Image (cartoon, rainbow, N blue to C red; front, side, top):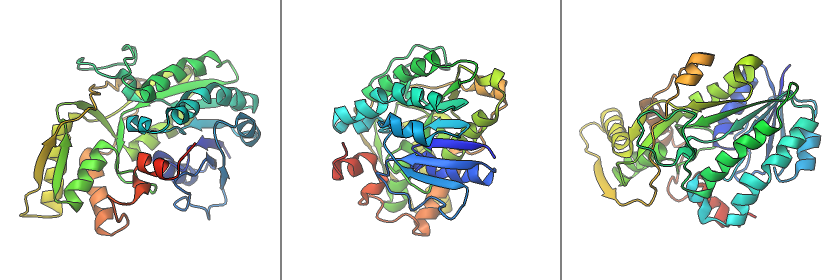
Length: 333
């Protein structure tokens, strides 16, 4: 049985990835600081091990990662707005901890290290198809650190320690540890629960990726032959749309499938989030045969169904759905 060690496994993407890998026959160890708890993980599965730990504790990572084949690095202080928080927290987690963590994994005997970077490393680009060799033009420390960590991993790879990096688009859709502070999810929450959509800016271009497709990409990187993935960087995205276009899709799905005959109002407001880029994900398709399976419409409909079933409630007040609100409340250090 292949063993996977996942930092941040109790996060938004991790909460969807862990059950996928368990169902696929992997033994999974989740290593997470548990800012958002872990009650949504499938704890009854005997092939799941859960460890409360900080990625800044490289000695603990080294000890816990022993006897694992793969290391999936998801843990970070996530999304650009998180830098409203104490900058030292974000710097220590997203950058300072990275090289000691890579070295700890290597020392533990990990064979393959998969690093979740971000397509936000491209910052602002008017190029229609941003490929992996595009210059990194980060607008915030979050995407700056994501970009700076990539060469650190590649510096330490060798024949016995493979490294691969993927740059996912903005993730969307329902996951057991739900986030409602991501563009598609924000707009859907407004449309379904407030009956209007607040659009921040609108012209910014965003690549998108359903959380299930994100997880399928990670699984593919776990299983791909070494010669196809070692020291490679892959964009992983699907529908490239402006915020205005995303909002229109949300409006259409919510009106047509959930509130027929009702018109969802669109309200535009200025935004100081200027990230704007469209990514090209041909490389991962050409080399690994990867194609996303889930559309924005799928993500919007899934979210609405969970709102309807009251799986997600208090969707504007509950800070567990909003990274920054939660970390400020618990005064994360």
